Amino acid sequence: MRKKNIIVVGLQWGDEGKGKIVDLLAKDADIVARYQGGNNAGHTVVSGDLSLVFRLVPSGILNEEKICILGNGVVIDPVVLFQELEDLKAIGINIKGRFFISYKSHIIMPYHKRLDIARERLRGAGMIGTTGRGIGPAYEDKVARLGIRAVDLINRDLLYKKIVLSLKEKNHLFKNVLGEDVFNPDDLIEEYLNYGGKIQEFLIDSSIFINERLDKGFNVMLEGAQGTFLDVDHGTYPYVTSSNTVGGSALSGIGLGPTKIDEVIGITKAYTTRVGEGYFPTELKGEEGRVIRDKGEEFGSVTGRPRRCGWFDVNLIKEAGRLNGATGMAVTKLDVLSGLGKINICTGYMLNGSVINHLPFSSADYDKAIPVYEEMEGWSGDISSIKSFKDLPVNSQKYILRIEDLTGLRINMLSVGKERMQTINLKNIF
Ligand code: IMP
Ligand code: MG
Image (tube, rainbow, N blue to C red; front, side, top):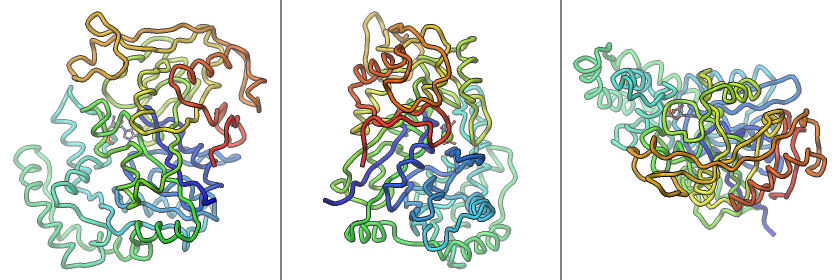
């Protein structure tokens, strides 16, 4: 039987703990690939004394037998990429011959970053709360057919023409609308050609590369960034990122057909967090939210912003399960909930007098839809070294079983601490 190909996706608003789970699952995958997003992502992996944050490179890179790929759906800031590769070198990780980039991936340019930040300022109170990394403007240029692809960085004439074209409208915007300095293509060309020289050795066609290896019996794990409700179509629009984060886009973001995938594993925290603005029905704005934030160290790994914290939301997870076709899930950070007394699970939203079991259709209704809760007894004590489900406090077992019951998704893995070891396996994935 051939080895399984799997997709790992966040079921919430990102930061579900995908880094740790992907790192664990990587031992059973020959290839780990990212299919969307850019350095707006931040995957934290803890191994012994080392705590590493990856923004761009797949978290599978720590495992030196694995091949890691950035697919065509990813947007790449070369400044960040080469810094990250330097950092990996500094801790002794060898990437030679096992790290690749799709030649079709798009490049984040300095003008994208300036545009991202200036646009947020223009929005004022209606800001999205982006990471300010130029992600949205880079994807806009891709769709507007103004984007610079990784392969363009190695051709001076082409690159120059593309920068000139992309700046035509943008310089007008910078100067006349946003009150920002304009860019001169002559100031960018040498630096980005230099990146081209460095990126060349990594360029591949991710579709050819992966499909050829699958034919030879290799398997692949596709690693999502952000989370389902930051998806530009299915998320809490307009408070979303600028890519499709759901499992379906994993295929187009790498050049693989849907028939190749065996499992889709969703990752969720045992509670909910969100960073940036936007709809968050189960948010705890008071003391309980602060307790979860401090205990769970809920601060953005890219921007350092405090994450908003709230109760587990069955509506979200059910919807995410459907949108991704999830075949199972991993629940992370259960240990953070120890000692809370009572714990709530949101089972629906009350909107205009009736209960709905999906996100409100119109963003005008976001603030009117009020969560309906089921209260559960909490548990206490440090559960972070518990190795099997039956040794967990009874109330935490009940909480987990209730989550499975309400979401209809089987839990494969339960994470009770940051370390790789602090994981309870319930059902094998591979
Ligand atoms: P952008 O992706 O920088 O355009 O930001 C759009 C929204 O997505 C903001 O609310 C960000 O905080 C959020 N976001 C982007 N990437 C991540 C992530 O990796 N984890 C959590 N939130 C993210
Ligand atoms: Mg993150």
